[in-house]
Length: 68
Image (cartoon, rainbow, N blue to C red; front, side, top):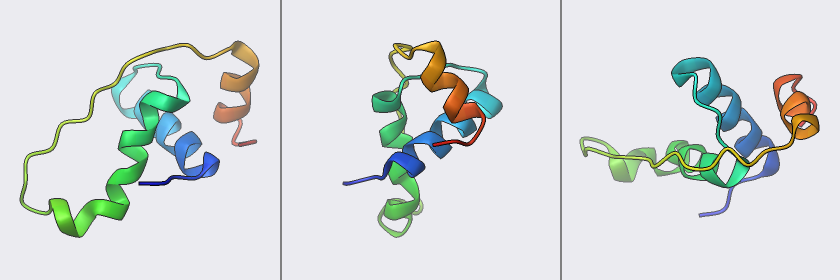
C-alpha cells in the first residue's frame, strides 16, 4: 500500500488529536492506509500498531501547522 506525504501527515495529526500519542511518519502510515482498504476491512476487527516517536521538532511543527 502506498500513501502520500500529505496522507501520512494527516494521519499523524489525527492520531495526536484523537489518542494524544505522538508517532513518527513511519508509524502513521498504517493508519493512513485504512481509508484505501475500507471495503476489504469492512466488518473485520483491525489493529494498527503505533510505534516510534522519532520526529524532530521542526517536522512536528510543520505537520501540526498543516505545512505538510
